[in-house]
Image 1 (cartoon, rainbow, N blue to C red):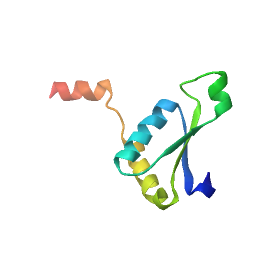
Image 2: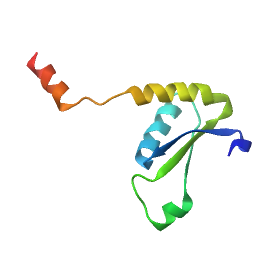
Image 3: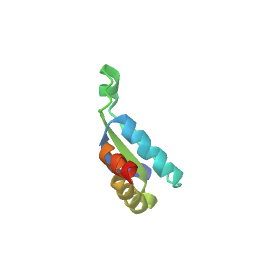
Length: 87
C-alpha cells in the first residue's frame, strides 16, 4: 500500500472501532483507507478482526497526532456520573 501514496498508521482490533476512527479522521479532512484481511472476512465475521488504517503519506504526522487525541478520550463511568449527580 505504501507505493500507492498511503501509509499504515495503525492496526485496530474491531471493524467498529476502525469505522469510528475513519469518521473522526475524515471529519478532520484526512482521507482514510481501511484494509481488512479478505480471507478472514470471507470465512467468518468477527467484531474484533484486525483492520489496518492507512492515510496519505502527506497526512501521516497529522493523522497520528489526531489519533493520539482520539485515544485519550475516555468514556465516563457510572462512578463519575454518580459523583456529578451528588453535587
